[in-house]
Length: 200
Image 1: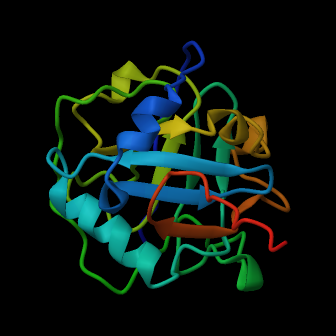
Image 2: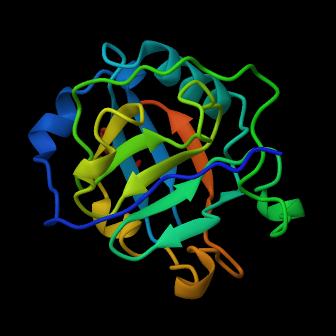
C-alpha cells in the first residue's frame, strides 16, 4: 500500500494583480471552489506538461469534485486529490492518502519552480516517479522541497480561501477529522462572469 505525502514550512502572503489574472489562457487555468470562495491557479504546462495534463484530465472528468483535504499542516501545506479514498461521499479516514486514480503513475518532472506560498505541487511516495492524482498547496515557503516534488501550478487569486482550509491534528501528521473538500474543480477562464443586462 502506498503512502503519499508532501513535507513542511513558512513565508509571507502571496498576491497577484487582477490584470495578470485577466491575461491567463483559460486552458492554462484551474479553478478550485472551496467553501469560502474560488481559488484560481495558473498551470505551468511548459515546466510540467504531463502533470498538468493529468490534473486537467481528472478535473474535466469530475474526479476531483468532492475530494477532501485529508492532510493539512499549519504553516506547511494542505494535501488533497485522493480520488480513490478521499471523496467526501465515501471518505475513508483509514485509507485516505494511500489511493490514486486508475491512470498510471507519472514520471517526475522536477523543475526550477520554487515551493512558495500558493505553490501547487504533486504528492508522491518515496519513489520520484509515483505521483498520480494527489497534490498539495503550500501555506508558506517550503524551499526544502525544491527539486524533489513536481511543481505544476501557482495560486494567483483566492489564497485567502486556501488559508481557511480546516487544519489537521498536530499529533497525527495533519490528519483531519470532518475535513474540508474541493466542491468543484474545473479548467476554464479566471475572468469574473459578467451579468446579463436586465430587461427593461
